[in-house]
Length: 201
Ligand code: ZN
Image (cartoon, rainbow, N blue to C red; front, side):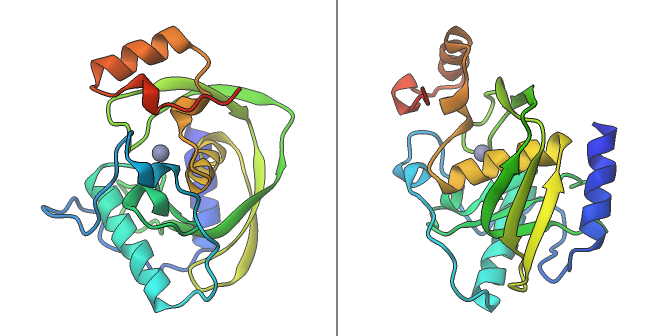
């Protein structure tokens, strides 16, 4: 975990902070985060054309809502916007660390090695379950200034990027959970319905 945070700090240094907002919870965040069962979560995001101020405004509002919900990642479909845009901040306690904005992200390679790690999601509050994913990924994307970039990530960053890119394809982490008994129990305990999970077989 410590290694992941160090890695984030390195990659973040190279990131512009033109969308940075105060990392404080707000009484009324600008965007509503849809919960499991909402159709918005199953809509595929459309590619963003021009990266302009309206896109940066959306990223800022997503960050404000994410910090308010104490999350480390949020994808546009979660706030009802069908765009391929996501925000990540693995270090929400440090005011000076800039967040990452990934626009039209694509995983261009994944490690053969897999990791099992417990995930949670702002759209499925309270539910935490193990998911198996590639340990490391390389991703291409445009940043908040529209600049093309590629990034290698492992640890928590790789995990978070894969989780958020799934959202852009209408996929939720619970769709990937293999422990079906554990999944049913967690969903029930937190007031969600198993019919809203679309298992990936
Ligand atoms: Zn999520």
